[in-house]
Image (cartoon, rainbow, N blue to C red):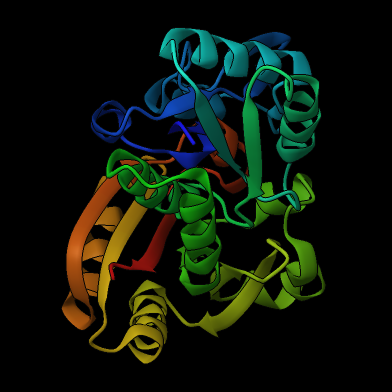
Length: 286
């Protein structure tokens, strides 16, 4: 069967220490700012991006890696391994990006050299990352490609994500607000708790009046879904570390947490959500 290597993209917002620990390979998406193209997380840090965002009059454009870039990465991983391997390539929701399509085309192109399984996470930011890390743990324990893929598909169904934005402007302008679009007018007067549906699209989970009540709505939803079941918790934030820490502590207060991660939202996801966004992702730990 050979070993399993894990690939994801930069929108998974996985902290560097976890990438290194579990040997996860990341392919960057791109951000276009004032005729300059940057690679998410490579030559554009979250801090630098949000500083640029504050000075822009328009919303940044983003783009997925090309099939050729994926091909090159898959081949490099195979060559570096020096042995028979399989690649599990896990990416941002296809409802938000063409990244999956590029990965699928590349997997077909290199199938004679290396076996690549492409998975649509139907998630974004660390909701992708938390799934990737769990898959990487299995691979590190020696699980084969079928075992990793099976567990990943199970975890996709059991992983929840809720997030709060300071403004719906970026989601609206980028067309990423999905089925929530009809409610923009009413939501602007509230603090919407947003989530992702089974198709990987943004939708309004519930409206709340103010941040404190919005966090309470998230706590109630998480406690109802997971109860005392052991879980992993991940919170990502867009230049809002204090709010991110508060959301993490709120989730830990009602859940049986086996591990928790606080990470930064990078430039691609940040282009669609804006500064101040906080998101919590939860997946079972058993």
